[in-house]
Image (cartoon, rainbow, N blue to C red; front, side):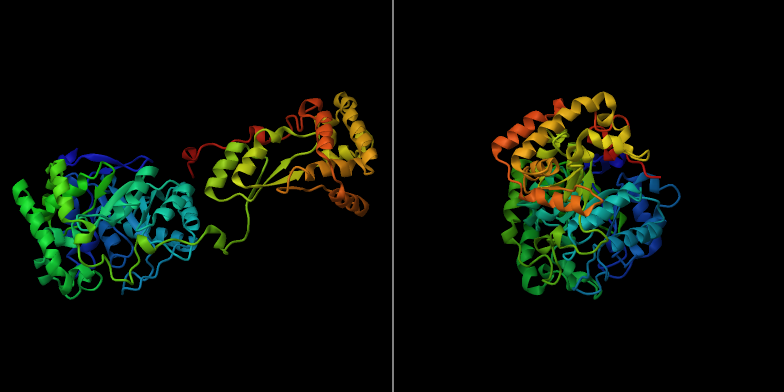
Length: 539
């Protein structure tokens, strides 16, 4: 616990950070002109020496210059001592109130590469989407971020100002480690939905502007000293003249309680955030070492349940006058993304798996919806019915049945083996071996007898059995002859009663067929599990 700053776990994926971070935005942008680089490097390094190791920046701050500043400050062995977070997504770098936000895969990757260069690092510890792109499904953005994790360019993924539904959808693609949101004594709207969602999913909470953009440190006098370049004059209605007088009363009451507690208003406001839980990490910004030290002191301020109640009663959401942002700036309340089905970019439309286990199907479907699973299903191959078919139906996945005619056996019976050419791989399959063929021909003879009764061919009967499994099943019999193709199409007209289905299934149960499907010649869904994602170590 260097410098008296304790450590906390952020999220559920292993990221550990100092219990308080440092927001670096104001060093380069938005709160007046950029500060001298040499002075800011001293502040950053003083923070590290004091135990603050979690640093927050963005490619939009400057633009770009804040990342460059942080990169310079972390040279000379300092990088190894910190957890570095940056953000992407705001494409026009906040030059006015109309933000241009992008989350398409090409932009995500390009933004990451540029941030790595500016920060002069090989890997970003925590990479946030700064604002959600309402034109791109969050699953698409997350898919590219997931690739960046797999490639070792980022370690953990975060979102900023995301709605609860977006958080859930993103977390289903790849675990979200942290949500960045504005949470302070005068900004508490996240408590109803966003904070509970994060806690349900095991996602850490990073609170920006925990001091109300300086208001909870200095009160209304702050406004008197804002320079013309200060964004608080433009973006934030709470600092407007018509609201500041009302909001001054909140600061006065916070200051009174702080005096009673023997701390500053800023320390009291920060302590309130710290007392929200060990899954919460505030990242107050400052450009002065004395303010940094004061903020660290907030970690030592103890608040009783009565203190917390008193603070919350005077600074409820309804008691603050003015919105957080002007209407043109989107927040989590207006930042849902379109459904994944709306995404039209790409070289493929739908995704399928073949010969996949039930657990693999579930894991794949959690990343992106699986449209179809291809599997061998026929009267003499029914092992998929116990586990694979129910899994597909539970998840709404279509079933494509290959070899529905038992690789021709249910069309021609054992005589087909007499015509195998030397290149025909079926001669190597166990069911076509002489020691098994004599037994298996009994199944074909019984199928043929029922087909004769039905007035159809054995192939049509076998195909009809597959068609009767359900409207979510599509068999794909192969043929090289038009007459066989026409015969296969005719199977669609063959009607089977429940009694006939039961009769067919009794004579062609899984146990009644002799010989494995492949033997050792090929893997099947029974031995095709994939390793856990955590084991993946890209080159």
